[in-house]
Length: 497
Image (cartoon, rainbow, N blue to C red; front, side, top):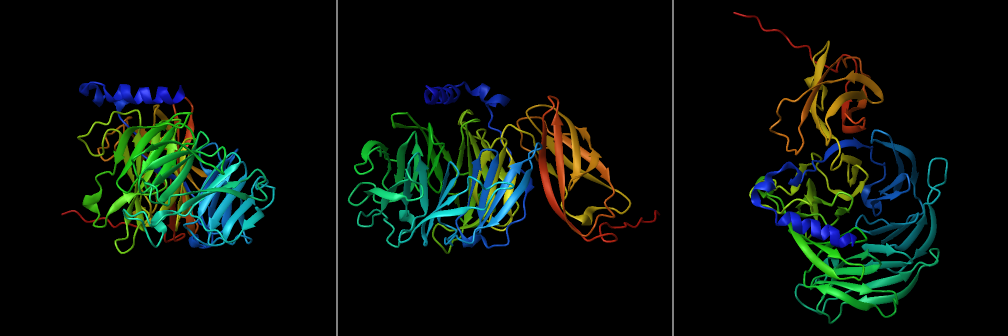
């Protein structure tokens, strides 16, 4: 019933009369702005697989053989609880497979299949513990559900990539993790000789194994992993999958993502197709959807990344250029840019971002050079600090500005430098045509004197409180200060004639 109600909601909205399509509540709105970031670990990003996972009140981030454990503060910022260098980790491939379940982390790369126990990794706890390593296997996609782990080396990464031919195939290996200390391979599913040609990605929905391939997408019943059973299929081929583990599944390709509902019996039903935004005008290189995406089934949105591709390499991202967030509840009405059912948010860093994960009101991504970044998510307070360098400060006092919006009226904005308050900002509602938002945008400004700020990198944070008393950090920026005497500019007055 839950899946049917979601599907019915989309259908009802899709057939709404055209004039109502301009109503605010039928417009997709999810501008993502940077609200916090942590310094990247000293170890190289390429030293291991990577990922972001939620476990109770903690968030684990694996990046470059360093596992960082975070707790979330009451204003939405992250607090580092501990950081562990995982010296026992043999994986050293940034494109390796990762999966997480019930406190256990599964990794795979050229080193084989590794399992780590993270259940006691917390403030005052212990470091990750290697509990199993199986050499001789190599995977780049992992999916876990219950007592079953599925593993795959995608066909797009094979030397004999199957471009319409059936002689280049691969297989999905199934492992029993009843005893997580000793995973046992209990079955395999080969694409050899089938219409699927080669598997590209795997996911679990309602305990069924879903695989997308060059020839289509298929659902398997692996309750008996030695003899996997066919459940349903679609003719839609895919390079990657986005899954919420339950009723939603996205079948992704470079230029489009087909969203499907899946029933508790494993039947797939497409309901909408999302395509790339109009960003090619500003980029000479081809653009594509990143192969990792997140379905937020609390707000009925698909959170994706758009990347610019390296024209000299196959399927290799050059940089991430934007978030692209699609709203399932908004009608798929065309004729505007961005379209009414999507929100495109540019990113400023010249890097590739990975592993988008929504945790409550926040979206986390792992940057290759910036480390873990936190973005304000859909339906919450979001905004911007229109300042990122001391060259704009006047000695003796200057003004900082920005904007903020939210589902409720913003009552107060407080500005912090590191953990010290600079005071409350004044708020006005001057129109901001440069900000695309369904809700009214408020401008804020505050007078500050930062002349004596010590030399080094300091974090400027903006925290808003709405009329319901909800308090949330909505923007953050790191600024390098040269130190007293070098933090501002004394501007000369010009003589009048």
